[in-house]
Image (cartoon, rainbow, N blue to C red; front, side):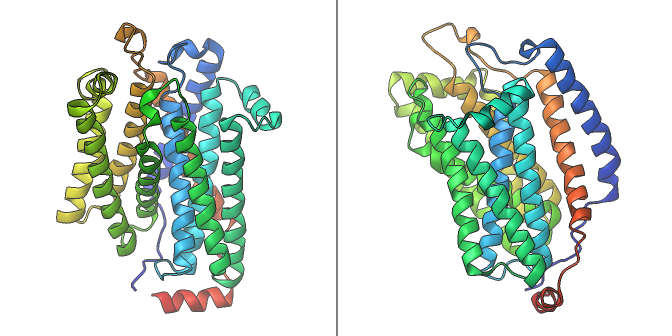
Length: 359
């Protein structure tokens, strides 16, 4: 298999990333000073863009970890590619932690969440499973750097940890009885599919010519298209009155822009580019954006109380939220570069030999 090993981000990414990171940090500080009223959140809608981006980042990191685990059984990544993929997974997990801190409104709240050990809370479970995934990625990385591969045992652990964190996040939504839309059995499935899309999209940013990642991404985009259309249009046409109301809110209400962006920009256009053109970076960026917008409409529709006036519970992200999330993504770019320098790419002789065999 021909695997491209030159997996370096263009230098043109760095200056914009620094600027966007600084702007994002300043915007978050403004939010901390002004309060959560500068966001689109209120007492009726408590989860928005920050949580949507959190789900996307953590799901993507988990999928990257799973991809490396699968590569212990199927030759889709060389040792160097495994190392860089694991570093990217660790970066995604850290950014997920930053995003959940932003959503809590105050860093002190994050400290309370970590130290509360209230395991009846799904948020606490989610945090500790996230920490488990980060440690699994770190140990896997150290193992790969030492010997060139993690081994099948590490591969199974990585896949299991990745599945666990995504399933917990999906179950966290589906277990909330007050939000009937999230109680659908499709919620966990959708989380797994969107995590796979995000992971493959992130992988394509650093491995644009990897055919295996490209094929996996094409498959999961098609699956997401089928599941999304089945869930929304079937619910709108044949569901009970409450389900129809929720799906019409998605199709033509205030959640509609996010749904149509996901459908067109995040699914149809990337699929066309994958089939007709060789535009891996564009495909990766559009697919990643689609995952975030999917999470926004799912969260917005799930929190819209249709027995009240729609305007009271119709979520729409504020400019502050957009800028802060873009800043978090820029921090992710810089953090990835920093971790790449920390784990400076030196691998053992065994790793180098395996890398040459993979090319």
